[in-house]
Image (cartoon, rainbow, N blue to C red; front, side):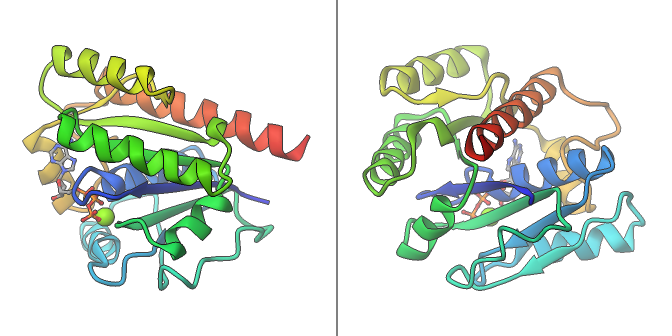
Length: 215
Ligand SMILES: Nc1ncnc2c1ncn2[C@@H]1O[C@H](COP(=O)(O)OP(=O)(O)OP(=O)(O)O)[C@@H](O)[C@H]1O
Ligand SMILES: [Mg+2]
């Protein structure tokens, strides 16, 4: 059975699809069998990225499955190692059902109060609907300074939620890489230490949660 990671947020443009691609690229690069699912029928940005990846002959190959948000994939498919579910920027009943089936629910957030406050409300709502707090984690995204990172980290800690180590800085090079079908772990300049730390923390956390569920 695969470990299931859901990327969720109420806000658009925070980095869900960007992070979903990075998780897929790292896992596939490590030889794992990855299923990356685009659950956002309004945008289908993962399909565009898959095409760019294919056109530019970038490896490893990552296949995208496109489904309706409410369709939800089979989270027990025995042939997958990692199932990554990329949701639209909107909390709906269908998104909640996806979150309930994930080992880890990752919410990317920007560092402003306008991003952090709704993010905390989303996790409160998921908890109220039965998603255990241990499965909820924030990923700090689109940061410009260390001061922004520190401030966001303390805001979320004060709200009682886990935050992944590291962060995803805001970089034009990431946008360019994504446009060419790469993930932000596959850029020419090499892997950013903050991103590497975030990815390692994410895989550690999902392993912990999958183990806790199976035990
Ligand atoms: N760290 C970053 N640096 C620069 N650009 C970024 C970064 N993260 C995301 N972007 C860009 O910001 C835009 C939104 O990112 P992304 O699509 O990952 O957000 P999302 O949360 O999936 O949005 P939506 O809710 O609309 O699905 C994209 O154009 C992406 O290339
Ligand atoms: Mg998206």
